[in-house]
Length: 343
Ligand SMILES: *[C@@H]1O[C@H](CO)[C@@H](O)[C@H](O)[C@H]1NC(C)=O
Ligand SMILES: *[C@@H]1O[C@H](CO)[C@@H](O)[C@H](O)[C@H]1NC(C)=O
Ligand SMILES: *[C@@H]1O[C@H](CO)[C@@H](O)[C@H](O)[C@H]1NC(C)=O
Ligand SMILES: *[C@@H]1O[C@H](CO)[C@@H](O)[C@H](O)[C@H]1NC(C)=O
Ligand SMILES: *[C@@H]1O[C@H](CO)[C@@H](O)[C@H](O)[C@H]1NC(C)=O
Ligand SMILES: *[C@@H]1O[C@H](CO)[C@@H](O)[C@H](O)[C@H]1NC(C)=O
Image 1 (cartoon, protein in one colour):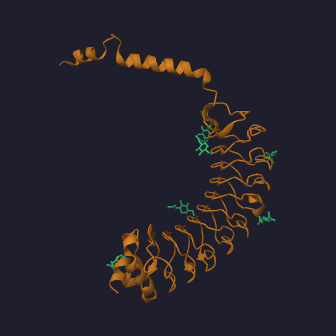
Image 2 (cartoon, helix red, strand yellow; image 1 turned 60 degrees about the vertical axis):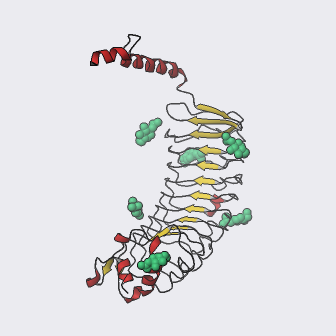
Image 3 (cartoon, helix red, strand yellow; image 1 turned 120 degrees about the vertical axis):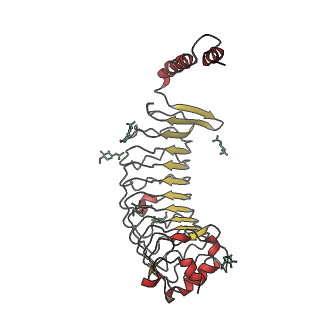
């Protein structure tokens, strides 16, 4: 079949297929231009969900039945005044990718049923005390990628139901004592990608059952014996990409259910005897695995305890080929697990 007869076969109406598709798209654009400034509204059985992205106009009033509002990617430095007034059923509020620098203490008063607040990628350097005084239903609070350098325990007052707190990607250098003292429902805490050098030893006193703790990509140098003790149910612990050179012998002692540990990318040359006793085999498998790669391990007798533990837990070890001896001289570059097996 020649290519010409193929073309003829494909356009029975005589109109070139490319041209007809272009016309269709133009019609579609013309039809949608008048409504391009409105937000998308979707009515679920429970109420209205409102999605606003550029180039729509951010809303100034919300229907009283609004349960979900997203106003994202506008680079807004301020929200329309009283935007939440009258939307007392609001459950989720997504304000990511704006440039909000502050919020008023009264901002959330109209929405006591709010469950999710996402403020990812704004410019918040502080929060007003009392912001969450009426937020007893808030379950998820995301403050990731803002400009927080300090936190105050008062800012978090009222968050009785908070299960997920994400403070990652800020500029936190230290945390105040008692920060989480009243957050009894907290399950996931993300403090990753900050500038933390030390943590208050009481940090984890308060939550009754933390499951996941993110401390990766900070500047921690020491892991003390007290920090993790209040959280026997912790299952995931992320400590990679810090400057840890010292881990206290009892640091993991209180952990009874750890399924995953990441200690990669630190400055560990050795670890104290007994550190691993409560983790992994023989007590129970560390189901999701562990990573101790990219540390300058000094493979001498001081690692005997670690060697035994590694062999017993070899099947859940990540990055084996990157878990190497950095010393002493004659051991440089050896694979730690192989050294352990040869003991
Ligand atoms: C509606 O509300 C019920 C009960 O709160 C909830 O289980 C369900 O997921 C909601 N549906 C939608 C579409 O939001
Ligand atoms: C927001 O800022 C980003 C980064 O400067 C830019 O790429 C984007 O186009 C801006 N969006 C709006 C809606 O102004
Ligand atoms: C945010 O801060 C600016 C400058 O300090 C102030 O003028 C404004 O009223 C504040 N806005 C809110 C909502 O607190
Ligand atoms: C914890 O809550 C109590 C009672 O509401 C309050 O008095 C106290 O200041 C709170 N503590 C912190 C550290 O927020
Ligand atoms: C490690 O942490 C530093 C900040 O401490 C960060 O800039 C870098 O991206 C992190 N590296 C990885 C691989 O996450
Ligand atoms: C690797 O771990 C498995 C499961 O814990 C264990 O049975 C086995 O003996 C270990 N292998 C070596 C070579 O030690």
